[in-house]
Image (tube, rainbow, N blue to C red; front, side):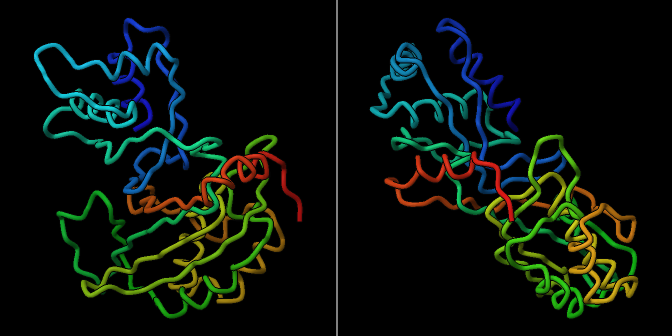
Amino acid sequence: MQGEIENAMATVFRRHGPPPTLIVAGRTDAGVHAAGQVAHVDLTAEQATAVLKPRRGTTHHDADAGVALARRINGIFGAVPDVVIVRGAVAPEGFDARFSAIWRRYEYRLADLDAARDPLQRHRTTWYPTRLNGDAMGEAAATLLGLHDFAAYCKPREGATTIRTLQDFVWRRDADGVLTATVKADAFCHSMVRSLVGASVAVGEGKLAVRDLALLRDVGDRTSAFKVMPARGLTLLQVGYPPDAELATRADQTRARRSL
């Protein structure tokens, strides 16, 4: 997604200096979807002026550079795109798509043997070849909530903290039988959601006990007790931000390395 948008901006601004870099609220692994991704770009004054000029052969005029840029990018993507810019606007002072965010919410869809396997949903649903105990998975998920070091559930990155506040983690079985996890935290480290889901699946299969997920977290070491689930079932749903007056302060707080 990021690469496609940056390529489109390179076309839009090909005569107006280096194209801007896209800063996203949540990095998504290959195969992960985003229904509510948020991003920002920093335009030069020349670029902002250029994008507001009506294109040759059109009479449409936007007064907001964000609206105009979104329209230009969507036009480059064409009629049947894989990526769509839903809305564009000039950001308030102090806004940073990544560092100003106060929470992200993801969803993971998992079809076990008790679920309908709908081929139309295959690109956003992982199919799992056994029956899972959804109630036990929900009990285990609830034991992980709060401010903790989630190193056991994160792929390590040099210099990056693994301390996170897991605000919500629930499982439900939808009308079609699909098990759906909703996971919300102030931020997520690399592979964290897919690891949390994988640990829950191990509980659903009876390979781990409900209490084991918190025990593994508190030990703090990466483990082979569960498998990291495929990217296909994961979607970034929504990103939350504080009031405009608190955006810059929140960004400064997020940039500071956390400790327990």
